[in-house]
Image (tube, rainbow, N blue to C red):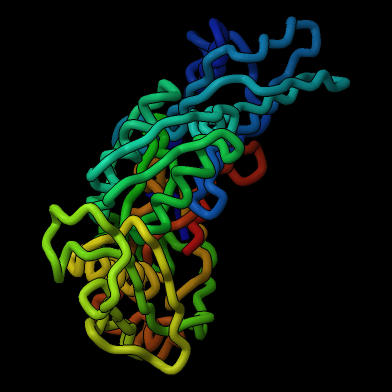
Length: 346
């Protein structure tokens, strides 16, 4: 088992640079940990530097981290200094990504007849962050943002309604992305680039979704002012996930989850939510982790595959032919003992 290329790094903290190139480096890097996680969500970086005589960076100083595994430098973290700690022989610096700003701002606003993704993009812009991939959400008759929940709290609720996951990428962009289909974005070779592997299949808390709206738009016309209907048949939808992970529209399983949302006023909207929730559930039937040599190109939401698994390996039967895993957590680790390692969570 061997690494497939050279590892280089650049850690910029304010005006100071810690680099694998001695000619341009101002500080000596001892250890680095970058976390991008959609189960939180969060983006954070911990940097340990040598030399205790240098003044620590100020809170709010910009931080960026680039890693190069041999095929070009990739930005794996963008954020600001949140805290620093003086140690006997150096310093530890903690930085947070732009998604942390969402948790520090309260917002107000009202929306009328817009899609959920429009509100998500507007919310991200209100706190000065940059939107990345924002999945199309259902049409909403109206939506109110009020103080109390932070911008992050509002975004998490909207992303959940869309069947999407909220996370930041290495460049600091905020995504609200639903699971994507298609082939693997990254491929790792068992016995060569794979260091550790753990995969399991589990039974989720529910196997189907039933969505109920409150509206007359489907049955009586979208121009109707009233929003309560005596017949809710037109504003309900359901979808199930089969044991093979296939989404089955119009069906319920044995453990359904029921969602009620008054802002959904049409049959099209509740159908979109039911399908999105079932698709999100199907993407989480397999969980686990994968540790590989430095893979700075991998971002949360990407699909990865493991090539070269023996046919009789237990993981091969779980993944199936051409199976992929959706990345939910990326952790880049760099230290003097192990070099550069990337841990992926699913």
